[in-house]
Length: 208
Ligand code: IMP
Image: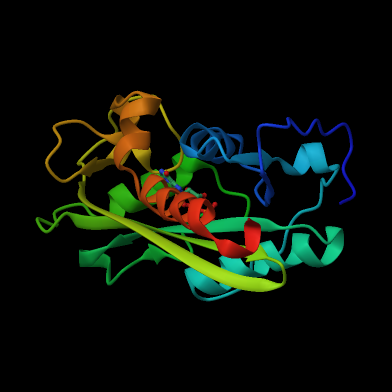
């Protein structure tokens, strides 16, 4: 693997590159990853590319990102793709969650657009879905996580990223952005998908 300055602690038996430029996601996944797995960032890999993401499903995008890094660096790696699906908006923003308010828009812009479109709508049901695509030893594997919740009338909380200030998970009285990192990591869509990835890595015979 072409890495720059990567320390490989001996206690880890699996080294996986996480194909993301999102530091929040990297921290979340590292906090959840099991002791068996060392997560290498793109920065540590020496990759500063804008990874293409042109699919029209979460699975297609996650695989496209993982394949890009796998093909370029010939390493075992994974990528995730996440979408916020709002029932009253027919599943939007969905796979277009990152650029819902337009090319180069901010998290704030996306939230403003969602709140505007949800004005006066009483059905606030929504969910976050994450798909992780893993490529190990030339094989593709997929892991999914989903959490149901609802869209708030206004932003609440300052933690997390993306749509966190307007998403309240079902059964909780605060938004993701009002939760600590540990609280969000114990229930989130990405946590569920990452736990499935971890379980797979613990038992995967091809990695033993
Ligand atoms: P991505 O393509 O997986 O990076 O996710 C697309 C967009 O979904 C991001 O730009 C964020 O706006 C949003 N998103 C992804 N994960 C989360 C999350 O955990 N909380 C809130 N928003 C998220």
